[in-house]
Image (cartoon, rainbow, N blue to C red; front, side, top):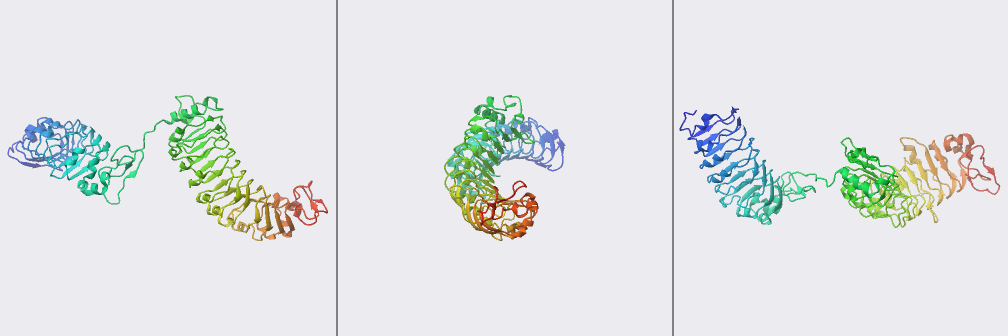
Length: 610
């Protein structure tokens, strides 16, 4: 082929040609167009290729496996109009001699493995298309970048997916019409004058301003900018640069080991009851006493209950990225919720019997499902921060001195399954809004100052345990509800209140529909209930029912045959195991064993269970 001295055009594309470029190709000195793309050529280009092909106007070498550096002699191909070196395995940088190619209109270097700085191409005055995408270019965009290019031409510029830094300079505004892709770099700013270039990027800059060029820091999308209607730059706190195409996880400020050392120091670790390996720097944190890790050695739990911690755990604790459970029960700490918003996976927090007093910031624990703060001497009204945590499934606040009423806002916790508020000083009615908590299984409100049950229980079909016993300062008043729509209710404690009326024949009739017939415990003692204990209760085979100290005048005889009732005592002692009859008494109001039979007492003439 070297004999073809006058050959002007040679097309060998897509021929699966292999090896280095044959020396005879360089002998074709009259070539104007050379098409060698999409083969398997390897090796470097000859350093004198510019002299050999000095008449070339179009050169296509893309999609091969060529290596080495792009020769400086390329600058001697002064008639070169189109050059495509993309999709090869070059090394080194972009030759400075490209600046001498004044007739070059299109240059494609994308995905070539090139590194080093972005050249200015300031001598390429005819350039209308330049792609250097998907390389390893670094540094800033030069001040003289494309400075001699004809500004009347529409420019297509692709700088995407390199490591360029700094700003996109305002000098680019001289191009009235341009399609620019600068996404996937490390740009920290963009000159605001560029955001007014209404003809850029097919008009999207006119529509979306800066976001039509690059999504701002703290955001991303698949394109790194807005490219179509209904597109948006999505939030991502880890993205520090303009034009990000994916959401990056921010580098942690501290290692897990460093955070645990902060906890150790801040809470008097040397004086803990158990601190095995906590002060051994070379040990994996997963071996520290009380640290729980998953299979990938991520810290998912801290179990430091009853361990002698003091002081205030540092807010950096919440920077443990995979922390799910935190149990600090029984330590003399003052817990702060500052920074809890960083604990994205924290679902369980136990602060029972600590010195925690302030709940400010708790509302930011947006994944929290279980919260314990029992016996903390907490005062005032129930913390409003809790009602903002719609993920909550369990709240344990018993044994404090909360006052005021139970707020209707509690009805917004629609995922709540357990609510424990016993042993406080809460007043008023049980709010009707609790009827919205259709997943509620356990409601414990005993030992408060509540006065009204409210007819909410028909909606709580999953309710298993209800305890509103021993309300102080008068107790619960009103009629005893039937609880006829609560098939899972197996513990009902309403004792020592002021409930009146009869026990309805429909009392607990929903139990008939229960899929699993478990034992049932009912405590209605110490109220003012009247009438007869209805025989309809015989649908519950295993019932322990406490009815003493009411004003009951009758006991259906059929109940005396329920041999499993009262822990099998009815099978032994008959009716007396349920209630001592009139004219008798017993300290428990019933017979519990052979030594505690109902004792005659002629003054107890009217009521059962005295």
